[in-house]
Length: 427
Ligand SMILES: Cc1cc2nc3c(=O)[nH]c(=O)nc-3n(C[C@H](O)[C@H](O)[C@H](O)COP(=O)(O)OP(=O)(O)OC[C@H]3O[C@@H](n4cnc5c(N)ncnc54)[C@H](O)[C@@H]3O)c2cc1C
Image 1: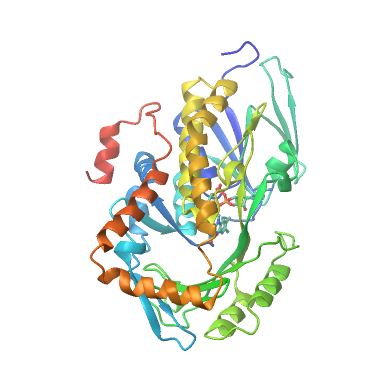
Image 2: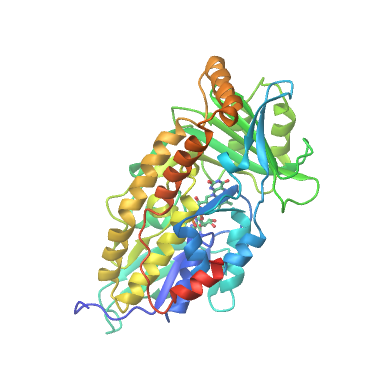
């Protein structure tokens, strides 16, 4: 431990989604005292279905939540592409393109956030409806080796040993400590929107896709979806960044409507559902790239540090993995944050960079630029399951995904017996 540091005890975490509560769980287990501040007045439950693979599943097992995660599996049976008249033009069997495969779990983001919150709320202080207004790090205010004085929007002033920004792609902590978001954001040329809506297509454990040049619309209902409801999801290409405030859903709904204006199939009705959606989500498909994730006693975690975008399919997995590694390195370093933050970056960065490369190339494939290319893609979707090399292609897709999902090595930190974790996973 360096002379200017003492073991950290109190940790303020900004953001109660995936990364924040997961970090709080581990820190509490290692004897730290975490406090989580969340800007929203209550836990935010919206969002897409998210994949958990490889290392993320192992971490869920070590957290003791894997059974509960699996009890909330989306349990999708598959999906199909339809044309403008609703006729099926290609089917996607779950074992090739998604759903529960060996080494793959899928859960709604909101369910995972709720599981993590419920597991931690008795041991961890949660402050909803508040946010960090300013933070000042001092070298040694109380003779104990320094800390961070935090003023909250509510006016409360408190001192913490460490502060963690787990507040997402548009991280407020990042802006306060490292500067404006645009310096770190790389737009990948598309926007995504998702929200709950009436189940207009009558789907059960099924996703229906409709592709148009530069756009993709999908509707799905998972196993746990409330009766009569579904999720409407829209992706559209936009090489230029759109001018809007990420806290302004009215403008976001207008931009979404403009992007799909005049389109047929079920699109007008699906779009009209956005008006009443309480969990409306709209964001750019973007990466966050930073040279370093910590400054002094402040460190970034999850999307705040290294958003890999929905195109990676690994954003939630990386958030869970980062929380595991950051807490583990802090415990291993006896609270010496300088050593721990350096080790956290060393362990995480190669895996993050691999996943971000993956995302940048996959983002280009999310939409297709012309009707001819859509027809070609549909031809491949239709013929692939009948080809003799379908297993080879499926294996190649799975191998690439598993490589990305296991890109961060998982050390055993503290007393997390591997045997207990194996037993929890059932192998
Ligand atoms: C409501 C919601 C819906 C989402 N839907 C999708 C989706 O459909 N597809 C997808 O790929 N990803 C989605 N995401 C992002 C996805 O959750 C992340 O990519 C991933 O899980 C990493 O999580 P994270 O905890 O690092 O960040 P996030 O999940 O983005 O969580 C950040 C948290 O910080 C909170 N926060 C923001 N500003 C402040 C502040 N100033 N003070 C305190 N707290 C603050 C936010 O309210 C949020 O709870 C969604 C996130 C949210 C919050």
